[in-house]
Image (cartoon, rainbow, N blue to C red; front, top):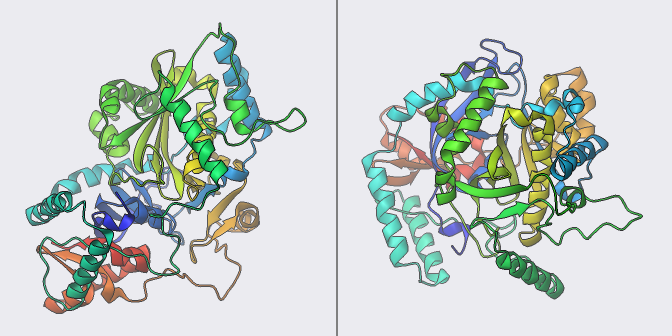
Length: 521
């Protein structure tokens, strides 16, 4: 694919109002409050913008906490991997893993000192009631046959015209937008979104790179291609650094994260660890081949770590919670070799899976969704270890895709001691819930000590720059037609939908409101 603009648009259904659920953190039976929508499909560009406005996905359900009303405010947190330096406790976890791999040594005494052991992302564990409710709703709130036929027809057209020049596509997209703006009904239409000036870098163009960097990248790719043990979608073997970044630490310098992770093991090492990245949606052949093994680990994890009854972690729950994803597969020439979208990062020890990190690879970040592992290996502090591996993986992806430089850890909940550990991965930032700017966590913590809910942006005049300013430009999909909301509402006899549409626009922001299609039955 040549650019983000050539992709099919995101399609979402917004659920009006706010829902109350049992809080998974403070256990308040109706304290958790959020807005939500069902994503039939999402481009990675749109999802990147949504999580930068405080949204988060659980399967295909995308939700945003009502921060000033929910019992435990959940602040989006991101780590800056390029400046990350492992702490003393992080190094202990990495050394513990190396000792286990090299000599089979097990040091169980440190387990209690690791609050991350339980999981990397607990944000939706308490919302299974919500997910179960959506399991019923998704049967009722599905795309109409008209929409399916419309998109299938468009995909065929894309395939036939894929060799057309970009200039022709640009002219066609402008014509479509003009037609939609005039209020004429449109059938089987695909919108080509052209980035507006000043709205960020054009991700379809390769970043400027020096010739030396390009030569290093070619050498790295050649070495990876020559690796006979490599998986189709890629793997990292313990003891083999997958990247030329950063350079090997000198003896008088502290070891880098990569030095600590990929330290050479003796030839007679007791164990072998591999980390494989497999695409989960749509499921790759490797994902399908390991599905049952992966599910059994998830089931044991939920039963032992989260005390779920045996009948709760079903295959259906596992699939919709951790395998189903609305993210579209997207590949760009200067993007990651594995492409963008949803993946499972499998940890293989001596030929069997012991842990799985569920991640999304987006234009600017690797986003951690969940981690589950075999409870028999709790002594390895796999919550911490997997987070450090995902930070290293982000640094590896950054080597080719320069704009991909952040690691999103989900939500930081200062009022919940169990979830405060995410603040230990420094440097990191929290998202201001009112202006959606990133603020270093050190500046946020004093305010959070005094109040659960805080506006982190200290400028009292600052506003949400991405707020909805022209709701009539919001895109609606209704009865086989894509049309602006300003036109759609004139066709409706009643204005009963207006409050919900305006609420949706305010939460997703102007850019997403204009790009994504809001499905109306």
